Length: 93
Length: 117
Image (tube, rainbow over the protein chains, first blue to last red):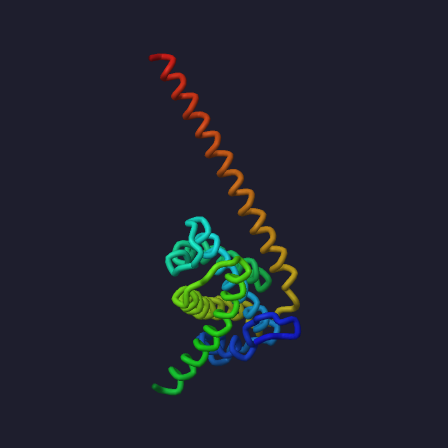
């Protein structure tokens, strides 16, 4: 999971298998670049989710990030990711 | 448990592992603890998010009748993230200004009422 820089990333094989499971058509293929991009987007999603939950916990003077903090920030996070997908997808249209 | 379900559980576990490490790193960075329950919830949401990405991307690919192939778009995403962050910042400041305006308007109205009395 770590590369030379000690960075935590989603493994390409994992992401590729996840995507393949979700495709409706058997013939849909995905390039290596696209897999890397989705891996990056997933990482952005997780980092945003965590940072926003931390901020929420902070605003409530909590030292521990609880599931309630995550639930509170989830709606805005989802719309944030939706906009990201729209932006990325504009390359295809 | 059939093969498909078994693969699903393996993939979920893999996602959970990476999510856990990302969450712990960020929490430690911010000098906070994060509960296992929260990490599990984020992992579950990320797993579902991937399903959404896949279906959206497949829909776009079929529109253009091509294989999804993306030259390096990382700079674009980074740029968009920065724009979004800036936009959020501007919105926050706008809201603060409006709140302050409303507050001063309310105070003026109160003062006027007091004078009238």
